[in-house]
Length: 306
Image 1: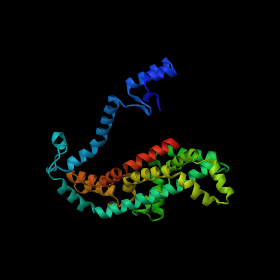
Image 2: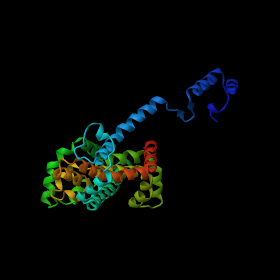
Image 3: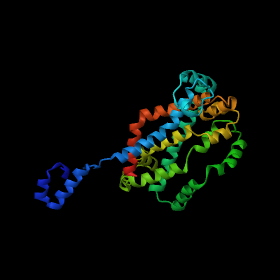
Image 4: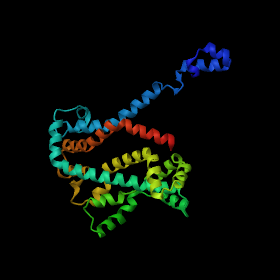
């Protein structure tokens, strides 16, 4: 039983005036055994953050719903119009939606699964295995995170052209099969979440290195792996820069470049363009809506164990 659940008189009798006065102050401030309750300032900040986060999506929906294609600014642009489903239907046909959705799901899923697999393998090696050059190699991997993506674009573009992958979805997938952030993320998590005693016990029982990794490290890494999968999946789903450069005439293969192509063909029809943006974002909104609780659980598990 916490000090907040017994009377102040009882606390004064058994714990003294100091303990009783502290309990009285906590009750006055609304402090519980789990921590202090959020006040109106916290709710005000959260409300502002939510409004700022949601506004771009609402603005896109509002523009997509306008019957007048010239409506882009002012109060009229913030009011929902009557033509949302008509404009979404037009954008659906222009995008070749199912083709673009299939390409985006393929790229996002393959990159996310591959990144989780290779990052877990590398993270387990850096966190729990002893080998020569481990420290400098991990430092080199982390240092690559400081290099801007734009610096690697030209050599990567030349490399993909040399192996005849220009315009192919594989040119989007291959460079994203593993990331330095994923390796760093899994290394940090496994260092705290996986005791050496478990690995040694598995070795004593005769488990091979691969079996130890699969039966001991993978279950321990599941919360962090789930979050890494989500981060990578969303990053690839919304990736525009590299697909735009490497897909060439195959721009309609993924949703982001297909939506951008609407601007090239009808640059004045912003209702059509915003309808394409809404269609592109809609599957991700559904993903967060149905998996929100699992995502928060994964983040909290990683925060506690990492």
